[in-house]
Length: 306
Image 1 (tube, rainbow, N blue to C red):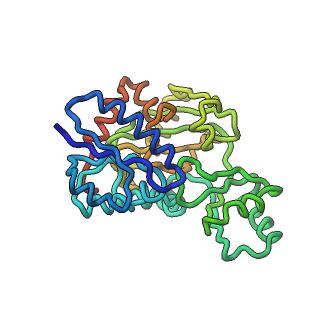
Image 2 (cartoon, rainbow, N blue to C red):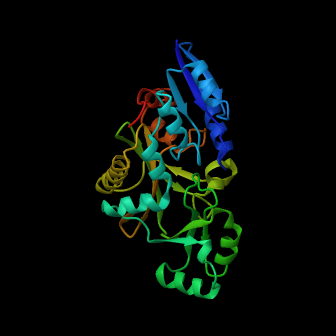
Image 3 (cartoon, one colour):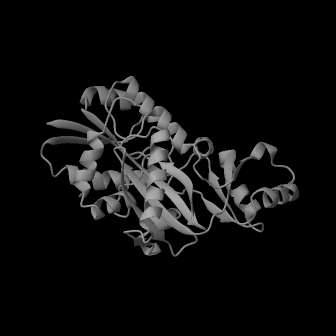
C-alpha cells in the first residue's frame, strides 16, 4: 500500500481553494484501496508528522505563499521526501511575477509591459498618475507580486488607481502591468508535454478570483479553442517553453491574452487548482484523461528535487 500525504490549507489567501482542491483529489484517490491517504494542514508539527507517517509521496495541493513559492518545497527536500509539482527554485521564480517576466523577456516570450510599484516611493500622487499614463497607459492591471488565483488583481483607470493602491498597501510592493485586451487562453502542460488549451469568456471584466471559483459567475469555457492549427501550435509551444525555462515539474498552467494576432504570456502557475471548476481537469477530460488518472500522472512525476 502506497502512503500519500496530501498538503492542504496553508496560510495564504488561497487557503479555501487549496482545501477544495484537496477534497476533490482525496475523493478520487480514496476510491483506490492501494492508497493510504492522510490530509494535513502543515503547521508547527508538520515535520514531526511527516517523519512519523513516512509517506512514499507528498501531494502538494497548497496554493499561494508558503505552498507554491519554494518554502514548503525546501522543507520536503531537506527531509528527502518525494513531492509533486515544481521544485524550490522553479516555484519561487514562477510565483514572483517580476522575476518570471524578466525570464520570459530574456527568452523572447512576449509579456505585457510592467512597472514595479513601491509604497516607499509613493509620495506625489499626481506625478504617479502622469508617470503611469506615459509608461503604461490606462487602463492598467494592478496585482501582488507573489499571489496566485488572481487574488487582489484589479483593472484600474486613472480615476480609481489611487483607491486601489491604498487598498493594497499591505503588500509593500505591487506589479503594475499594461492592460492587454483580447481573448483569454489558458494552456496546461503535464510531464513536459502539452496537455491542451481552453478559452475563457468571463461575464466579468476578466477571469478574476470570482470568475474562477464562483459557479454563479457563469464564465463560458470553450474547448477546443477556435483558432487555426498554426496559432494553436504557437500558443502551446510558448507555454511548453515557459514550463521548461522555469524548470517546472508535473503540471503547470500558463495564462495568455491573444490580441492583434499576438500571444501575451501573463504568468505561469506551478500549482493550478484541481477543483470541480478548475481548468486543468477540464482540459484533461477533453483529452480522455479522467480526473483520477490525471492525479496519478501528477503523482508519477513526483521527485525529491529538480
